[in-house]
Image (spheres, rainbow, N blue to C red):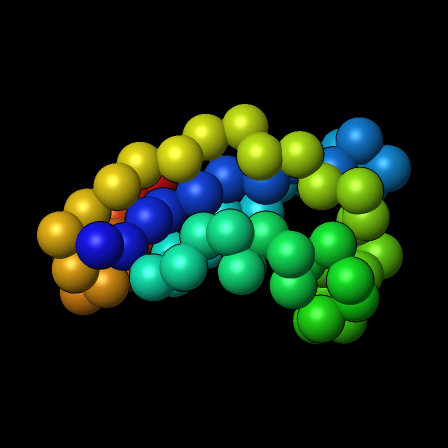
Length: 65
């Protein structure tokens, strides 16, 4: 299973869209300064999640606007 997720940062007033196969792990990484972009927006709130059969489908959805 794979997920597309949207996070929101009140601090930046911005959204972040991602896709992954382990949402719990990925959310944890976003909360511990794992990447430079998301580190500046901590704390991030999960505002949307959609589940897919595979990562390819999730990534295709991630790119749609």
